Image 1 (tube, helix red, strand yellow):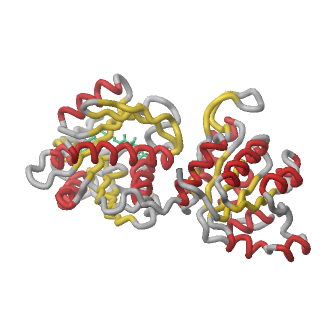
Image 2: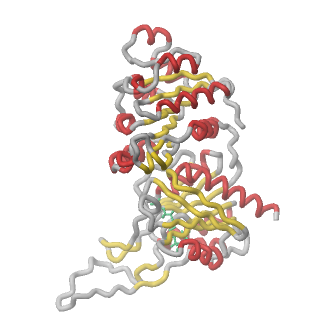
Length: 406
Ligand code: PMT
């Protein structure tokens, strides 16, 4: 277990019933010898008292941006600089919205703007609130800016509802903090190439065939590998996402371009992962000019030809073949189809992705996978795509290392 000896952690608490769990989180941090300073929003002070938090953290609790006494002790900029890490638990919908637009209207949001330390958010809110598009957008914006989400979990809520929105348990948040502060860089020296997003197959100069892949899963996976020190090449179809730090990104449009680039990188990789939703077919001939509506016919017949299979071709390399991992997005008989693809494409692992379940798979913030390999399988339950990617990356590396020994 990574000790947090001497690590300086700001625990931000915003106003939700889950605030009571933060007391246990602070206790765990202190037990691990971290230095803790607590910042409370005005609403949070209705749920937990500064006195309790001061006693547990061993330090005065900061509540107000405009308190001259508190500013004398440790001003907001000093606190922002002091932190090795900021964790906000619970992070309410209101706090996420304020952070997403860059507000600095209380002490906690100001510290978040003024810090260069990593920020972890443990969202907690009613399941219906969590499902709102605006909440999802705000959380996605924060993730794209590098903040990390821990959970939330699914289950029974304080209000009696059941669903996603329960704050992660203190021990889960504690281990996310350990991971974030770990300098071990577990994947240092490893070269990983990942395909992500959709491909676009042009029909004519203004139209194309594509699919709903957003690239979020592949980008989250790239970030999970890069954060642990891997050298990551990300071959991205047309997506609207920011490149994660320390990732080499290659933008492509069509399956043929993705194929060419991935095959050129593959022999220099240890691991190649096909997360992209690649179009199986493309136009036999792309029209030079915009296709016109045909008078006298209600039909337009397009002739398509098969695209090359990128990961099957990587897996078929006779020299310098990397460890190859595929995804299988399926709407029925998910495990059966995934197992067939594992074999047919000669992959080392495949991530079966049931995309018939609402809220996971294509263009969602969360996902769940069952990962299959020759002699085993493991389920990775529903969680945000980055947390899922951290677990998936660890599992892939574990299987890759096992394959090297055999
Ligand atoms: O991008 P997001 O919105 O976050 O969504 C993530 C996702 C649902 C796209 C992702 O999790 C996923 O499941 N990707 C695989 C999508 C898919 O439909 O795969 P497939 O069953 O068509 O292909 C199987 C495997 O072969 C995949 O690894 C695919 O990348 C690869 N393939 C497929 C066809 C082809 N011509 N070349 C390939 O490399």
